[in-house]
Image 1 (cartoon, rainbow, N blue to C red):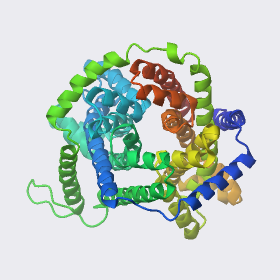
Image 2 (cartoon, rainbow, N blue to C red; image 1 turned 90 degrees about the horizontal axis):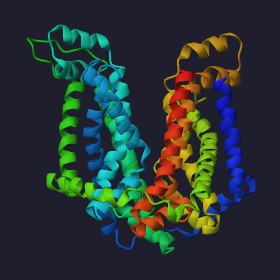
Image 3 (cartoon, helix red, strand yellow; image 1 turned 180 degrees about the horizontal axis):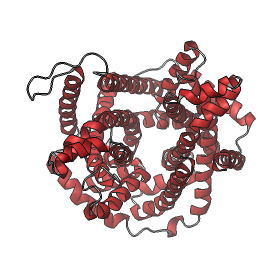
Image 4 (cartoon, rainbow, N blue to C red; image 1 turned 120 degrees about the horizontal axis):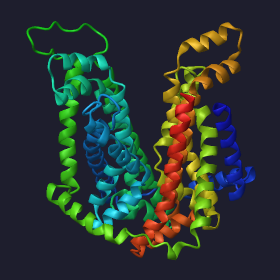
Length: 527
């Protein structure tokens, strides 16, 4: 019942949301025509000061690396503490007391947008890259902590028991019986998060964290579309480079050493296999890169200590929340925010599922279709969400801001959903598909029954995750005038009304938690 009810309810809510926003088929066609016309006016691209542009791109990259490194350290501790089994303390009283706290911190970090963290830390330590690093780090803890905890829970209990049988203590069991098992999945999650954080750091630059995001926003603000196109192309090129390096490292670390003969073991020394050598080189290289990144953004021990003290002082500016200045627009603003998120999720999922299936080797009809879909998918994922919103708002104008924001988020959602669906489709079991084909089913029946049937639990979680992301994107829309609630938030941030900022963010935070609760319940039902 849940498997049928969820897509039906999703479609109904999506259609109602689009109707509320005034998004129709004619509007969709005309809107993308306006975007094409804008892109034509923005060509050929220019760069007024290439040296400054590339310096700002490098600042953005350092910010992403430092934020990811900070998140990795925090998430490793929280992930181990939050794991139901296999973590620190096992089933002891300490573990039972600490686990709910660790889970609450992880959920809170995931629910609070990185932009809100950035605003808070700008108030605490001032304008510069350090607030961006702290914002990216804390927000990334939400994703990495969850993935780290799940990996620890899925680790083979037999290895832990074997290590415990030698008399190892809790820390030794964790270090030698658990971490070596979860290292591949942790590395994959860290590299994927670095990819996400570079695109996120582009947005943070527009709220006082420095980097290329401010240049991009300024160029669009002055309607210098050719300059904006030049900056955007440089940004997209760096995103593609970061993703290519990330994919290469994942392949090297997760694939090295899986095949081939194992070197003979002499004495008690562990042999230096190709996989072990790659892991050590990458690990030590990552530590050096993180240290350089922290130095470049000024995130030394003294600066972090000052940030901690400033954060305590800043809390008094954000709490208690002041609802009075926004009491009249919260209801309508929340409705518009929910409608934009639902409409964008519906349109994005509608486009993203076929694209993801076409990009999966296990489902694509031939290599030509798969490669074409992969190229389109990588191209869409390389465009930062701030850039998408700026382009659509510039094409539609502020009068149609909610429509422009919906379409921009729909394109972003299509890339997100397609990536996750493609990854899930690669792991489909072959048995159910062969059974359906042996019963005389055609390609369409195989797709709907054996492929989508297996994907249903993950697809439901992916759709709700996309809705979660789109709800938190209300500030991105607001800074360019594409959403009433986000626009009010940006105005109160400029006015330093931090208690009003909290009043606007809290209801959206509650919405995100509600989506998280529905997602968790649905996953348990469909499992």
